[in-house]
Image 1 (spheres, helix red, strand yellow):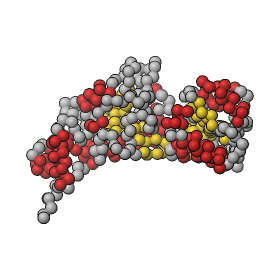
Image 2: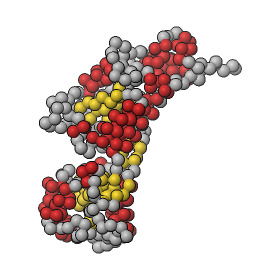
Image 3: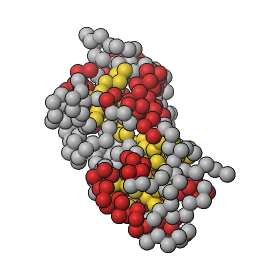
Image 4: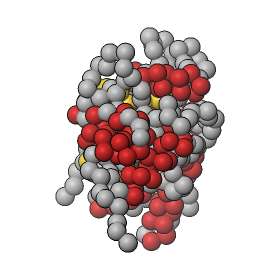
Length: 355
């Protein structure tokens, strides 16, 4: 039985399907302006005749609808977040110190593909928009690609029409939508800190961490710590200081009690105020207790700890989104994937020098 003749261009496919060239383009972009039946018929014909759209051309076609002036050759991708900031002109990640490098990385990488990055605050506070309103804006601007920032609660992004958008997430896994994500390797982070501190001669190594942070990472932090102490026992009965508040300043007395009772010679922490609290108690850093920060950035640039590059996270997130857009991966996948980035240990002022 003769095979179906191979089609090499979208115009050939359009002629075979009896539709316009633009209808074929819309079918491959999952554009809601054409019916599902038309889209499926075009895709079936494409598969039958071995046609695959040029991925670079596909990206070039992702621009604003006719009649609107595009800011770049290919239009925009969206970045949505649920973080409200007070006393700023607009709730934006550019006003959050540890998030700014991510935003800058996303903007820079989007530009290399010819896209602008449109930021939206989705929430009920002033300046925020609802998921329904967001759907309308994205449709009006012809935006298909969406980067999702960490939501503050489970229903934060409920109502977004993912069937007609390609999405990826930054960092979070705690709440929906469960899309492919880019984050840092938590296991490598805590394991590296433990190994480096041990190599510097520290034995009584503790971990100070908000309980929610640990649980959101499936207890990788506490699990790695407890396994380390099982392999290298030092007499510490409770090397983990897990606190209910996101800020260690809210649990000062409990923190001091833990330090007095467990007598750590080094602490892995995520809150930069740990150093201030120890010094206020008359404890010298690093002479009495060393500190290792789990995310060395601008605000703790001189610390020892795990140095990360949030700008690289932003760039990798855009790369992941572009890959999914090229492959027309609309909707929420049944099985999601993770891209885990790794940092590296930095010797700094909060631990003894090596050697």
